Structures are given as structure tokens and as C-alpha cells.
Length: 221
Image (cartoon, rainbow, N blue to C red; front, top):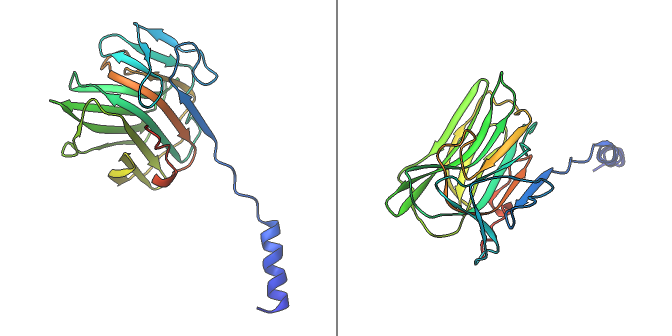
């Protein structure tokens, strides 16, 4: 490399803007008084129990839920939503993490659901907004209930993906995605108080970029 080329390369490196640090929100569900910096609104009588992954909030699948006054991925053009949870069986359709906007003209949402079949379950990940709507689901990919799992969904600007324990389950191209508006999150139930969850949630983590599986919070023990 010539001296001139080396100088130009060095100048470009110095002038290039530093990569923006990813913004991350982590919620640990080890109490009912404060999750992150937020005070939850509690429905029913969810319990806090200790277990192999640490303390977690347990939902009865009937009327237990938490609401937090924040949509942690509002404004994100790319994202990762991940969680550590334990499904305990029960009703076929259960929505246990629901991020919803408060915009009446464009009620966007991101969510995790499960479908329960006997003593097994399969994952349903979904994202919806003005101009886009995409579900990731594969009924053939069954997992036993009563165990702890890490699940994730990511969007890198082109492809929407879902994972269970770091293993890719589904992926598809997602066109027309627009960052979602501020809102709130329900845990243990769909935002409009149907499809209650029977099981436990230990943590959820939200990042404004698409993480690779090696970057997931896979600590379930």
C-alpha cells in the first residue's frame, strides 16, 4: 500500500462515525413491586416462586397478568425480543408477552404466544403494524411443557426469525416494517385480557438490533 493510500485509509477510519451502541431493556420478573424501573399493574394473584432459573412470576392461566407502561421496542427499526419462560400446559391458545402501541389510528403489536397440544407446545411469534403483518409458527416443532425455555424473535431489516433455545424455528422476509409507536406491555395475557397464560416468566430482554443466537441471554439454569 502506498503512503498516500495508507493516509487516506487512516483518515477515513478516523472520520467514520462510531457504531451506535445498541439500546437494551431487561426486565427480570422476580417480584411484583418493580420490574426494571416500572411499577407493574397486577391483575389476579400471580405468585413469585424460586426455582432453577431464579425467582420468576407464575401465572395461573385464569386471571393472572402484569401490565407495564412501556413498549420497550417503540421506535426500533430492527429488533430482538427474547425471554426465558416455562409453559405449564392448559388452554390451546395462550398469549404471554404482548407489546402494544397506544396509537388508536395504528395499533401495532409484537408478541409471543404458545399453542398447547396435550403435553407439548409450539411457538407463535407475531408482528403487526400499518402495512405489515407476519406470523412465525410451525405446529410440527413441539416441545414438552413443564420445562424452562429461551425464546427469541429478531428482525434485521429484511428477515424476521424466531428461535427456541437458540435454534432457528422459522424465518421469512418481512417487507414494509415501520417502527412501532410508544405503548405498554402485558405479561401473562393478551393486551385485551383474553388468552391467559399458564406458566412462569423469568425475564425478558429487548434490543434495538437483530442479535445472533450466540448473543442471546441463554442462561436458563
